[in-house]
Every structure is written in C-alpha cells, then in structure tokens.
Image (cartoon, helix red, strand yellow):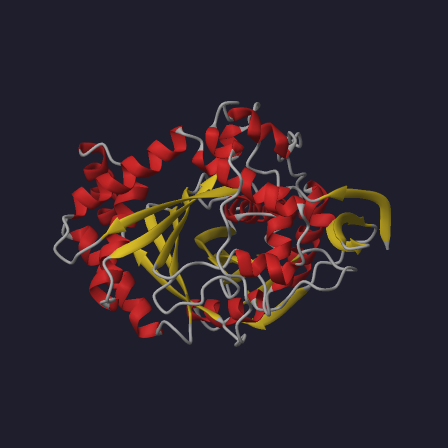
Length: 425
C-alpha cells in the first residue's frame, strides 16, 4: 500500500495537520469550477489519475509513525469521486459542504477528493484538498491542469505541462530574515489561556457574490490613481460592509491578510508545486460607518506593506515553527491558535493566470472560486473570512462564516454592501 519512502511535513503542513486533528471537524478547502461542454465520467477519472502522476503531493497520504505524522507515497492511486446529476450552479454550496466537512482520515487514500456534477453540456467539478498538501493558489492551478488534461484526452493528444518540481527547503525562508531581528530572538509571548471550554459542533457556511467587469475596472483604475493595492481597497470595503451590516458594538477589528511565500525563496518556485506555502499578517483598524473608504484602504495598504518589508510574515512563521518544535498534542495546539474575537480575514488568490479556454473547443471553464473550512478557528459571532478570486474580469467574493453565529442573510448582505461601496467609489 505504501512505498518505503517517507518525508517530513514542513512547518505549514504540520501546522495544518495539527489544526485538522485537534478539531472536531477539519481545515479542508475546495476549489469550485463550472464547465461548459461534454465531459464524460470516464474521461474525468482518467484525467484525475493523469493529474496525480504530474504532481507528487497528489499521490501522498499521511501516516502516523509513533506520534509523528509523515508523508508516504501510495503505490496505487484511486481518487475518490462522487457523481451527481447537475441541476444548476446553485448546487455548488451543498456539494461543497458534503466534501469539505468530511475528514481525510483514511491513510490508504490520497489527501484530496472530487465531486462531479454532470449535466448536459455543463456542470461543476469540485476539488477538495487537505490543507497540508496544497493552498488556494495551488488548487486553482491544479484545476487548470485538470482541464488541460481533459482537453488533451478529448482530442486524443499528448499533454505538455511544464512543471518546476524543485522545491527549496522551508528553512530557506528564514534566510530572508536579518540575524539581528530582535523579534526572533525574544522568547515567545505567553499564549492566551488554553483551558479547554465546552466544545460545540460548529459548521462553516459560505456565500458567493460575483462583481461585474465594469466595477472591477473601476476599482483597478482608482487603486492606481491612489497608489493603493486592489487588495487593500477590497479589504477596506469588507471592513466597512461588516460594520454597516453587522453593527457590532466595537469599532476596532483585527484584520488578517494571508500572504503567499513563494516569492521569498532563494530561487523562484513554480505555482504548480503543490505545497502549502503561506503565512499571515495581522493589523488593527478602527472602523466607523462614516470612515472614508480611501483613507481606510490607505491605512490597510501602508500597515500591510510596512510589515512585509520588516519580514513580519516570515517571523510569524518562525514563531509557529518554534511552537511546533515542542510537538504539542493537536488539541492543545489548536487551543493556542484559536482566532480572537473581532477578527476579519482576507485570503486573496488574486488574478487567475489562465483564461478558461483550452485546445479542445468542446470544453471551457466558465467560473472558478474557492472556499475554506474555518470550523476549528472561528468561535465568535463577528468573525468571518473573505476569499477573493479574479477570473474573466470578474471578482468572485466568497464569505466563510460559522452558521450558528453569523446568519446567511447577513453574509449575503455584507457581500452586496461591499459591491455597493465599490460601485460608489
């Protein structure tokens, strides 16, 4: 079943394994795509197998050796696929919930699964990954590769996907940090109270809202005019929308940006390498309903980029590494890393690098976006996470929230309010 070759999990992979195993649920994520054309079950299954042959991490499972998780390669790969009849794009949500809420706990299977909603000339393909083998950017690239392979099989052609398999060790990240960085030499601050509270089953829910091409062009133009990144404008609009819709009793939010680390390696790493390589940067902002959107976006932009220059995202990763060196039990580790109240997070994949058209004109990708399971982290009613993907000149906004604490009506209202704010800029 397993090959004799084993490998250790890097800092981020181990962190995600700890979070997953310490929770009642898991920290999976799902990439959702809508296709046009005719994709048969047979072609999809063959294409999934070919995709796994291209990417080593898609052939891995995690097996516990002693108390330590290790990657092992599977001798035989059978990707779990669930097939349903396609009735409409709105099916994405229920199909995602079924996939994302199921734990990867079978070490005889790979750490990803697929749902295929098959219709007449259109449907949905969902790829769900354990967060220890991939992140959102990888997942989107993998979906693109899958469509390329499907196209080649429809045409009965050989597929040519150039991949850089070289992945420098995670330790190379730390070479970007100056030796005299005091933050790394200080002892870790005392963690917050880790006494376990009575656990209750929390489930992540999701809302999707698509912003049109005209609004996107306007946001890009205004971001350039004000010399502010689009990410910062979107984050500012998100903060203001939450403030307006949820009307929390507090004014100060903790705002977290997910930062991808590939650019900080000593040599460039291909997007196609399916390794989880991300960190985060936290900021605090006071937000009032009358706060000017550009002033808030400027604050978000300046704070984020100042901390990036200081290497804060890498020092955060180093602190996590130090914590993991002690190999705490997963439940204790998760308690240390629970999200604080008033936390809003933006996970921004950015502009997708492909157009959704392939050699076989018989298929095309019409939509792509992602969702993440946050059950194990969000325990407070105002906490939420925004996913942002730009594809075919449209912005796909996905809001992730705990359904018992944050209503779906509020979630939809927040995304619509975001659009209103962006249109009125």
